[in-house]
Amino acid sequence: MDELTRVKIHFRMEHWMPLIKECQASGMSVKSWCQQNDIKESAYYYWLKRIRREACAKQLPAVQTENQKPVEFAKLRVETGTAGTDAAVIIHLPSATVEVREGTSQKTLVSVILALKALC
Image (cartoon, rainbow, N blue to C red; front, side, top):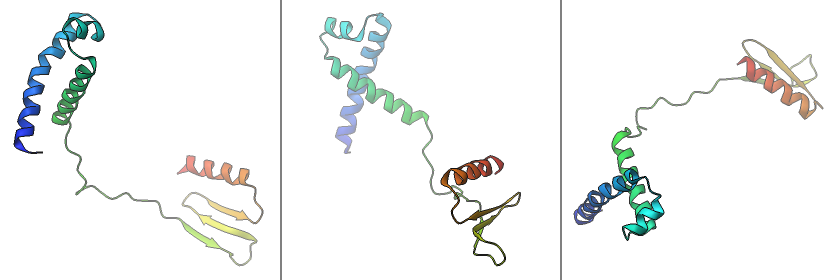
């Protein structure tokens, strides 16, 4: 955005801020106040949105993405086809071991996973 555009927007915001405050202090509905003051309701809401967005941008800190700690995931050791067992999958956790056998129903798997989620 060039400097001239920034100045125009700033000027218009300075014009609209007192109008919006006046409308809000009037106790009237926005529609009635706009009709009485010969202002388009759509223009009122447009500048209200712009002013609010500007106010939020000034108050909220910028989002930092550079020095953020990366997301870490829990590491699970998964073994398949362990000798001496007929389990299709074995999951070893610090507090439990899960063996999933061939043909285990989806309903059972969901129940086990939800129980593990509560533990971890």
